[in-house]
Image 1 (cartoon, rainbow, N blue to C red):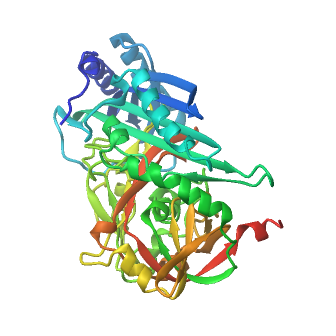
Image 2: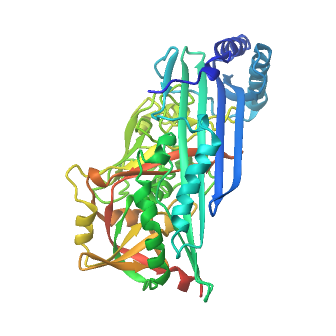
Image 3: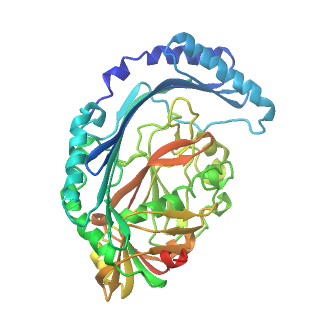
Length: 505
C-alpha cells in the first residue's frame, strides 16, 4: 500500500480546518465541513511517434461548506493561511444568509459515524507523476512505432492522462480524513487511409482508464504486447468489411463496449438527484423516478447491478466521500427490479422513508476545492453469474447475430431512456461462430427494452472494468472519473441500424 505524499501531509491542513470550523461555529453554523485539495495532472500526446503535446497542471486550494439556518453556504480560497481559512468560513456563512430567503427546504443530513484522523490510499504501485517525462514519452513512442511498422497503418495517436488527487476533509462532527487517489487513462488509435479511394477508418485499443499507476502502462492489468500486435489486423479487416444489413439481431456484447451503455442508461438514471428533477445538466433527468422504486422492471431477472465505492482499481473508489461517508457497496437493480439509488447525505435524509435506509451510500464528490460537493456516480457495475458461461459459450448460443467489442459513439435522450451506441469492432455470428467483421453498426433501443432482452451474463472470468475519466455533471461543470465493471452478456432481438445508410450516404 502506498502512502499519502509527504509534501501534501506537510501542508497545515489541521490548523486550517480548525480555524475554519471554529469560525463557522462561532457564526452560528449548525454544521460545517472543510476541504483542502491538491490535484496534480499530466497529459501527453504523440502523433505518429512524435511528441505533439505535453501538459502539467496543479490545482491547490481550500473550501468551506456550512449549514446556517437550514441553508447551504459555500466558499473557497487559495491562500493556505489561517486568516484565509477564517475568511472563507465567513464567506460561506454569508452566502447561506443571503440564500436563506429563497430556500424552501431546510437542509438536514443523514447520520454517519465519526472517523477520527483516518487515512486511505488507492491501489497502485507507481505514481505516474513521479516519473521523468522522457520515460513516459519513450514508452508511447515505442507503442506508436510498433503500429507504424505495419504498412496498413497510416497514422497513430497515442496519449495518456494521469492524475494524483490528494484531499483532506474535516467536519464539525469530528470526522477528519486524508486520502490520495491515483488514476491513469491511456488511448492508442491507429488510422488506415486508402490512397486510391480516400476511404479511411480507425481502430482504437480497448484499454480502459483505471485506478492504477504507471505499472498499468507496462503490463500490469492490461496485455499491451498482445493488443498492439493485433490492432493492425483488426484495422485491415475493418477497412474491407461489408456494411451491416439493418434489422433485428441477437447480440453478444463485450464488457469493453457494454460499460458505456451501463454508464448512460443505468449509472446516470439511478442518480437520485436526476430522478427527483434536481439535476438536469448534461443529458437531463431520469425515467427511473422515485415512485418506481421496488416495482420498475429495469431488465430481465438475470440483471444484478450494484453501486460500489470500494472496488479495487475503480475510478470512483474512495475510502470516504466528500461528506465524510465511508465507501460501501449496495444494490441498484436486483433480479431485474429497481431497488436503489445513488445518494448523498441530504438526499438520504429527505427520502429515508421511501429509500428504506437512513444512511447515505457515499456519493458526494467535488472535482476541486473550487467546487461544491454534488451527488456523483459510484462505480456502477453489472455483476457476473457465479457459474456463468464464457464469452465463447455465449456466442455459441447465437444463430444469427453480432459480437460487439470496444466503445465509440453514443446518444441518449433527456430521460435516459431512448439510446443508440456504436463500437470499435463488430463480428457477424453465424451458427454459433464468428464469421468476419462488419462495419457501420449501431444498436438502438429503450433502456428497459434493452436490459429486458438480456438472456444471460457471463461468468467472473469475462468480467472487465471499463470507465471514463471525464464524466460531466452540474453547472458550473464538474468532471468525475468513474468505473463500470461488467461481464460479457447475451441480448436477444436488438434493433441494428446501418449508420452509413442512416446518414444518407
